[in-house]
Length: 401
Ligand SMILES: Cc1ncc(COP(=O)(O)O)c(C=O)c1O
Image (cartoon, rainbow, N blue to C red; front, side, top):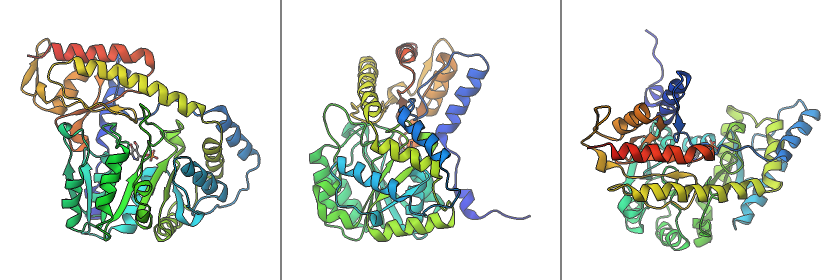
């Protein structure tokens, strides 16, 4: 029988999508489902973005475009980075892709030979593991549990980098925890990074505009500019502008890495579609009020979710300061039974499944992110659904014994 390549055996469908699909199925059966599962921003971009797309359609060149990204798009991205203090990048430092996921995949292909080590903290965004497995890298996970606020410490980084991994992959603000590193925390990690020049650093910071409490966004390059020649910054339109389906992602870093991404692009996507690029330029350069309003709304929703998490006995939940996720440790429920239904809670997966079956609330088990004592709540659902969803979550806990 004809065989597929071994790499396909290592690729897995997204665990998050499996929960979202189950929730969709129950909804189609007429159940009242509140979804806290999928990490979509749940808002649409401003009208100027659609106007730019319509205008691009009206003036379609009908041609292939640049493998790197159009000059207008690269320039808009460079200006956008400058707003968060990442200055001095040229077009040659940048490349675009079909979403940040695609850009990260390309960079993994560009930096990791089979068997090279990539190191990243857990909890991690699910695709990091899957991408690393597809390229057959060795994966070194750095556990960052709730009692250290899900954050990597300089000491942990030091030990990990002493083993000379090829790549250190970092994510700030974090999906799934919503945690944001402070200026001092970034600075302390950057001090470790400068001592290990053999490791590339990918910093996936696609939620950099979704930071609360006036904390601000900080990057290793802000802290130690000499890291610029091996730090690769990742950004995306998906969350910031409510444009996940438009599929626009970016990188900025050393020229040779950007060029490698361009080469990869030239061999599969060729270019981002012209209409999408025009919409992306409008999003980056146009009015930013939708993003700002949504960030303020997410901060309010974070407060609402945290009020409930803090009120449930035994749940440990570091207070997130960005993105739109909360990641409570729910291991206090393990070994209990949901009394009305008789469903046993053995772990995060049985917890989420029982919660969905009995209360119609969909959350993602923490094991999807390498943290099986927790679950992820994505709180971007329509505002009127948030309070009832949280109330059902709290009731579910009260019904465990
Ligand atoms: C941390 C992180 N990085 C990258 C991505 C992928 O973003 P994009 O939609 O641009 O592919 C996501 C999406 O959920 C994410 O949470």
